[in-house]
Length: 343
Ligand SMILES: Nc1ncnc2c1ncn2[C@@H]1O[C@H](COP(=O)(O)OP(=O)(O)O)[C@@H](O)[C@H]1O
Ligand SMILES: [Mg+2]
Image (tube, rainbow, N blue to C red; front, side):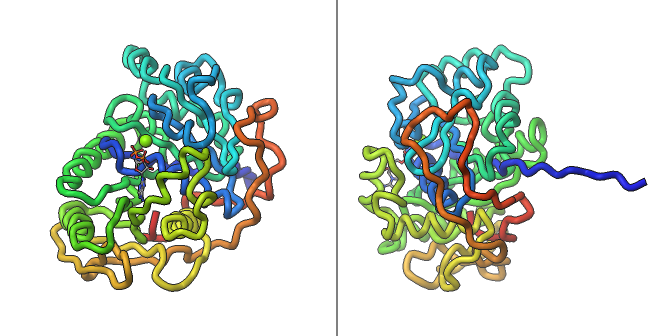
């Protein structure tokens, strides 16, 4: 007898993680979120860092918030009540400094690694993507982020010794895959604060590519003073400097994540570099590196163009904890990802 199965689209969850601070995790979450919103995708950002920089960057004052992710992770409130709308188009599960205490409380609880995953399960059907901004540690909060995620993106600041952090994080990812989340996969390393004018940034990326079996996501995110302005305005760089190279780079990665076709030349390509394999510099300004003999995928091989971004009220609580007035959702599941492609 033929059984009818109803498929419910649930959000694809991407964790942005690196235990080092200042590598552009928060910037990447805010910018990728804005890029996905521009494509008409329904996006939830999760601030998993007690420093609450993402919350601040999205235009909310963490010190003035009464409800936060803290209450959600401890099972006191459903996520839907805490989620806020932001001016950039994404919804936000905000953090406050209380999250630091939450870490200690969670440690004494059974199933502590699954608190975020369980909370997100309740709202997953309302979004196409959930982007999780992890704190600069490999503690229980980051493990929660990785346990809830389908994929992890690792921002890499292109400086000496950066590779060490990548190795430690990949070990943690392997532990999570083994113990709490077998479906987790590493989407790749995203070179950030990249200075294409010197050989050093490229050398760091090539070093990482030769040490670990990871995808290097392209284009790299160039270092630019334009990034400094955005958080203070409560908006992402896609709004404050929308035509800048950094904004365009995050748009290219947003298209690759969403599986949307983009400009054909030189954008959002990725090279997989076999461990120990040689690599040579990518062509084009600012290219992070290309692998000899590695598989590659052009960003945006499938999918269709998205609709307009959503209208939102800046920092307003979501009415009734539900999302409304969205453009038609375009189902984007894990399988819609560009194969072997960028972020
Ligand atoms: N591409 C960039 N160019 C210049 N400054 C950047 C860039 N990306 C991020 N920044 C700045 O670097 C600092 C650290 O970025 P942030 O995203 O907060 O890192 P993390 O979340 O990893 O600690 C912030 O002041 C941010 O504005
Ligand atoms: Mg941060």
